Structure formats: structure tokens, C-alpha cells
Length: 543
Ligand code: FAD
Image 1: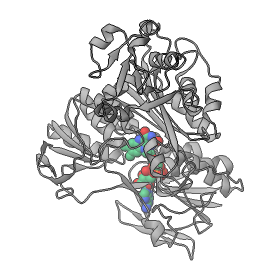
Image 2: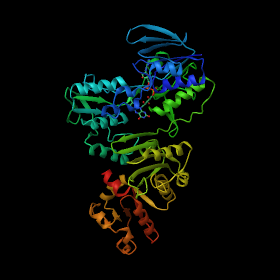
Image 3: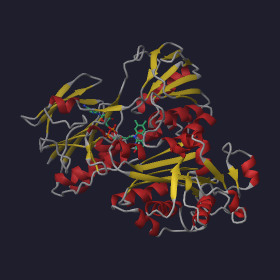
Image 4: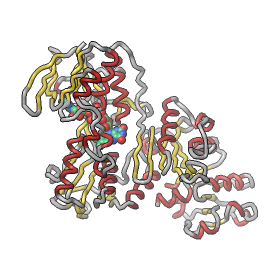
């Protein structure tokens, strides 16, 4: 069998390697229009800070290594410019020599990735404006910065790439402004959780411009629609990416409603001899039950393996995607999976959420830190739909647990009882994910009521009664104006100070003491008691 592969990075290289593992005889040729195959796209931003010391380190495999280790023919600087389905050939152009030739296939696999979106901004095609997709892009950017002694840089777009680029440039001591059109950065996170990331960026000196549209890019600055002028000798555009579908369109392959290449469960396009994987395809959202696109490396590599398997008669059970991701924002590790509350509500799914702030390890351990954890679940089934975790410890581990639960159709009941490993250095006996599920079951079954931090401002403006059960010294360091301070340790003696005829909104620092206070009040005849989910830490971050 002769298999041609378009694209030599995540999806393409993984497919080619898998084919070789399945078939020693297959002729496999991989075409890559850029100068490198198999590089680490995900590590590109880390070259800007020096965490990745040289750009060569970003390249995992050379064509020579592919030949030696896998007996694969990897051709760099060779762009596939057309597919002739009638005669099962592709047309290839050598981007350096200009030579054009045809190559025949039995099977063709497309993994051409995505291309950065360039918003229609005046000046966006200037020589000091950069996008980042491959090693050549990051080398060009770094060289420009170094050659021109650039200090002021604007990054347009607050998604994964924008945030990582902003952080790494800041680590390299540049003055960085991150400009985001919407009200928050990082879409997978709800507005309560994202505050932690935004504060961390600000605390590390990244200038954050939210609800800011760039109107014009000039030589040394960008102009925002709100009239602000942001100093920028370099502009990095990270405003999203579009699936690379030019070849598919030229070849008459079907696209899906999201604009990605349409594939079946085995990653075949409407032409069974042509497969497609990676950022270029449309995938199925397992939770929202609708087509979507997901530009992440893990899914691309798994799709690649599945496509190669199918070429050899092994069928797949494609579950669809849930979207699990992680990102470091300076000292914080952030991870998310499934859908957030905002997305659920937009999709008309009835959900509730709990926001728990718990130690990631036993408090006595020197590296113990609070972990902010939000669990989103369906009402009334309790089915887990998503989670977000942010902390200095292992946020990703907690999110990986939840990703597993979602994939297996788990509920908050399952999570409450989930038996996880424990030692004081790694977690707590009841891990934060168990804790969140316990709170969620209590709320779902009506054992106590809660309000979210996002509701606190409205409640405050309506004159609601807040009960702060932290210790006096904590209260004195900052409080909700007008709140009554009755520390949990004094609550039982001072219950007569708390009104019975109006709702009471109880908070402490992280919602643990307040939960105990809520239960004590309820069990003492108070009927309108609410725990503030996320508590004072969450409130402060949200405001
Ligand atoms: P790619 O890996 O982009 O490969 C496509 C290749 O096809 C390209 O090299 C392109 O030059 C080539 N090509 C296109 N058209 C042709 C043609 N006609 N002929 C020949 N060659 C062609 N994902 C994560 O999960 N976690 C992360 O932390 C993460 N960080 C990222 C950081 C950055 C800066 C970037 C850019 C991406 C990041 N991603 C991350 C996304 C991840 O890299 C992609 O989802 C993944 O690489 C997609 O694989 P792919 O094979 O579809 O596309």
C-alpha cells in the first residue's frame, strides 16, 4: 500500500509512524511545506523566555531520523498544491526550487493543521506584526526582537497562545500588553475562575486590556477603539486559527457546518481513500452533542492513530471530544475540562456548580497551597459536565480525574466516593475533587443552599445580610461592608445576634467554616441560610 501524508507535525507524523508499526511493507511519504517535520508546536512560546534555550531543541525528528527509525520518506519544503481524486494523485510543489511533480496514492491522509486568523485591522500586514504557528515563525519573532532591541510588545488575543506568548515575553523582561476583545481571557474558564489568571498576569506586570478592540497598528504603537494608545514595537497576533481547508475544498471534499473537514467515525472524508485528522477537521462534542472544532495536540495524535488503524481494518469507536486543556500562568497551574457554566447555560442545559477552595496537600506540608476548584454538573441528574482548577499545585491532576469521570459518564455521586491515592505530600485524605462532589450532592439534594460569588454584588446592593464566620483578626483585615462577624468558634453562644426572619448569606475565607456554620444554623432552626460558594477569597477575586 502507498500512503501519502500531507502535513508533517502532530497528526501527520503520528499517522506515518503508526502505519509503519502496522505495516513494514507500506510505502509512506510525508509532505511538509515548512522546513521542519515533527516539532513541538506547544513548546514554541517557551523559546521566547529561554525555557527552551535554542530553536533546534523544538525539533523532535529530522527527515533523516524518520528514514532511519521508521523507513519513512519525509519531504520538507514540499507543499501539496492539489489533489486529483480522479487519478488518485497529488500535485507537489518544492517551495525552494519551484519544481512541481505528481505523486500517486492508494490512501491519502490530510493533517494540514490550521492557519492563524488575521483580523481586518489597518497595519496588520506590517513587518513588525507576527503570528506563531511553527519554528520558523518563532525564530523570526525572536530574531526581530533581539536585532531591534524591542522592549514594548502588544499581544492581540487572550487565548492559550496569546497568554503563553505574553507570559514568556514578560519572563524575558519585555513590557507586554495583552489585548483581548471580550470581557475576559481564556474562554474555557468561567468569569469567576478567570479572575485568578487575570490577576496573576497583572501581578507579574502584564498590562491587560479587556473589552479592547485594536483599530490600527502603527510603527511603535497600536490604537484601541476606546482611544488608548499602547506602546508596541512588535505586535503578536494570536486571535484564533482557521482550519486549513484549501486543499480539501479544491478536491471537492465536504466541509462540516463548523468549517472543518467533515469526517466519519474512522476519520474518512466523503472520499473513502482520503482521511483527515487534526486541527483541520470537524469533531463531535460529546457533551453538547453537536459538531465542533478542537485544536489540541492530544486529540490530533489520537485521531492519527485511529485513522492509520482503520487503513488496516481496525475500526474505532469514536466517542467525540470533551476538550481538556491546561496552561501555566506564571505561578499558577490552570486546567479545565468539559464545558463551563457559561457554555452550559448558552446551550440551554440546566446546570449548577460548586466552587471549592481547599488545600491541595495536607496543610502541614511545606508546599501545600489552596486549590481553586469549580465543578459543573447537570441538574437534576448530577452528571458531571465540566471542571476548572487553578492553583500552585497539581491542578491538572484534578482535571484529569474529572475528564475521566466525564468520559465514563460519571455523576457527583460517583465522584464523592471515588477512591484516590493519598499521602500528605500529594493531596488530602478527602481530595478537593471528592470535596467538591460532597458539596455538590449536598446542594443538589437540598441539604443546604448556596449562592455563587457572581451573585454577591447584587445581593449586597439589595441590602442582604452577610454573616462572616472568620476569626476577628481576619475580619479586621477586610470584610463585606455591613457584614456581621461571628467567628465559627463563637457561633453557638451568639446565635441570638442572627436574625431568623430574613435570608442569611454566610461566608468565611474558603467556604469550609461557613459550611459548618450553615449546618449549625439550619440545625438550630434557621430556615433561610445560604453558603457563599467560593467565599471571601472568591468574592475578592471576583470584584
Ligand atoms: P500541525 O501540527 O499544525 O501540522 C500541520 C502541518 O501541515 C504544518 O506544519 C503545515 O506547514 C503543514 N501543511 C499545511 N498545508 C500543507 C500542504 N498543503 N502541504 C504540505 N504541508 C502542509 N495543543 C495542546 O494540546 N496543548 C498545548 O499546550 C498547545 N500549545 C500550542 C502552542 C502553539 C504556539 C500552537 C501553534 C499550538 C498549540 N497547540 C497546543 C495546538 C497543537 O499544536 C495542535 O492542535 C496540533 O499541532 C494539531 O496537529 P495538526 O497535525 O492538525 O497540525
